[in-house]
Image (tube, rainbow, N blue to C red; front, top):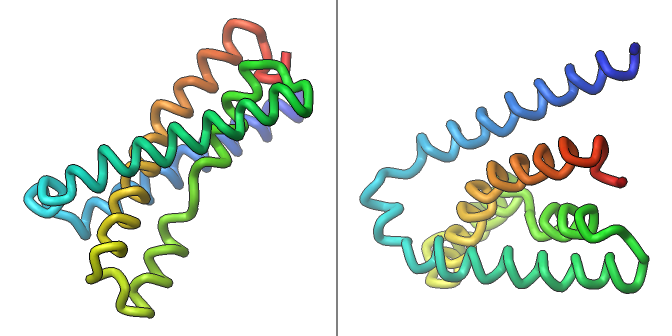
Length: 134
């Protein structure tokens, strides 16, 4: 019982953190700016997340004998990176204004958007089996 209370509190804090991050990122970008980055955001971002998640899920499932649902979640989680840290590094080096900096920014934004479906997937996977690791 005590563990369930801490788990719920942790979940609430994590959800608040995600909302706060998305709000903070949203303050810095206009719709026009995002529209100009649609290729970087949706093509490169989707390719990075899907390819990385697929490879890491495959490795987790086949080499570590992790159940398929859990391997998918592990692959997706490891495909994400910290937007705050990478943006800070890009801003400090001035690379944010270069072509590859824009691509990196597009990938980071896609990763941030992908968090929502990943969290939904975790909920769906755990609801059917009672646990993500079952």
